[in-house]
Image (cartoon, rainbow, N blue to C red; front, top):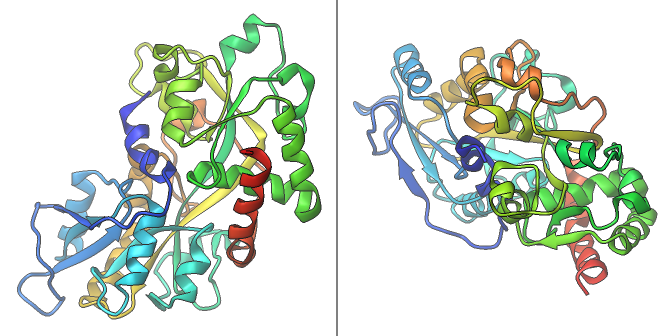
Length: 366
């Protein structure tokens, strides 16, 4: 397993219940402290989840362009960081929050933690990603897909065509081959459940999961265990002698498996079943009551710039929201093109998430 991918998505694959203290990370010069655009210490503070990453040179370029230094406060996985931002909204711990995704967005918006700001460059972001286009409380920064990944060698060796759709996964030829994450404790697990709800509807998704359970789906607590221990196609899974050739992971997992491998293979050891995906979009927003509002606006503009957007894929293994940004070759050569991922309005997710998780737990875990 590539360490960059582990860093980038491991934290986001954990549960969302605990509320840890935010940990500070130095920015372009390692400095700390909270400042304002009018003070001597021109620091802008970015609050995010543990998966946030950017190259030092890119952060230094922001400082050269604007005069602001970036301080990063990391607060656990995405759910933990959002909860902490809500709890501290009367005294925000930073100027900008990055990392609330479409499964958590309504929770943040309903709690009023963001101030409106229309970012420069927003016209280069597809309208379908702009979940709050009317009010501009958040800005889309990146997008990615949760999908079933498969082990090429297993299916070639068994002369079996890999599954390509959710319908395929309940067929007898794929019995006992899939491992997924617990919906109640894992972001990828929840996204996979949402993919099935988007596909089969409120009245059909439970019947689908009954079939999936009867077909031998294995459920583990989180992504790390599923991908790096149970999945036979990953480097970590091979080492752990994993025996599941199908796993719920990310569309960006295949490029990560070949990053740094020399010589580069003709194709990666894993691939994506593109008919099983659910789209996640991450947003940034200016925190209401921020001490450095102007610095926060400048940082959001920078997060949407090509400089940051083209650095982001190999830092966090996500795709740029800015359609002008170019993907690195490892993404275009080894990644999957997901043309029609499952999607769902954040408001619907917020309204139904708890009852869906409870119903799934009763159905699948009993």
